[in-house]
Length: 155
Figure 1 (cartoon, rainbow, N blue to C red):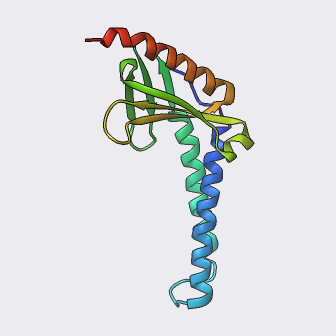
Figure 2: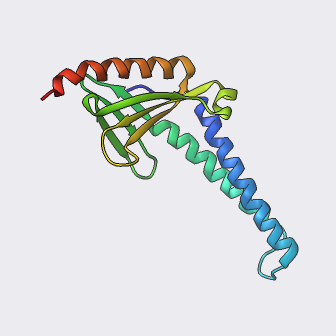
């Protein structure tokens, strides 16, 4: 089973930090402008710390639970902290494959590979936390395997 690049944890922890800042700012505004008697002045700081701590721990657990494998006839993904999700994407169902690098991913040096499948709306899976070269390599490998498997599914 292939693991994600450990730097993806930085992205997920940064996301937790942003969430903590938003929660803290909203509660700070409530405490400052509404002055409810049931909320002490330290509430925004405590809430932000709890949100950040929970998010950071969830990022580490999420990283540890994530894995993928290119099998003989399919892409297998396993992920999920609270709910384990196992996804099998047969190569014959792959429509196209993209590599993407958002601005924050570029800063950290990471990329994602997105696999679009035949099916209903939202029928796609993403493998985040890959190096740029790793995402391109996975994209090309899946593309080759999908093209090769087209003959297996011909009518």
